[in-house]
Length: 124
Image 1 (cartoon, helix red, strand yellow):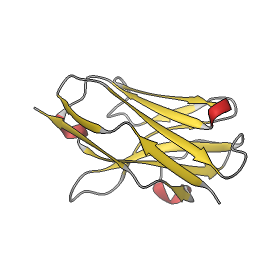
Image 2 (cartoon, rainbow, N blue to C red):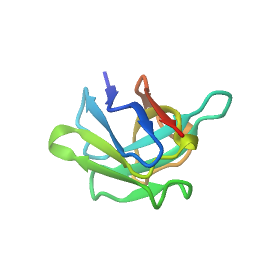
Image 3 (cartoon, rainbow, N blue to C red):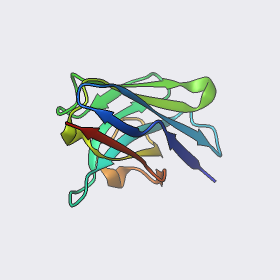
């Protein structure tokens, strides 16, 4: 059974950085895509970034492209989201997602597996 466990969230000030981690377990993930989505109160879940574990191809939302970087450590089945220059509008619950696919998807329905989420709060 696939399990995704996020960590690294917290309360920071605008302009600070955070690194989120998502550790996957339960199967071999080499042909999987892992992604990050976020959901702010009262808003729909939105795509942030995704990476294919084999080859490392990535996709990022335009809203975070210049500030967030996604990376992976295949030996640890772990994906990271480095978030720099955080803004109050980045405040949300950040979810890790995974699916067996060849191209990083940007729609939540493209991912079968989800973590429980980690809260990121950015104060102004």
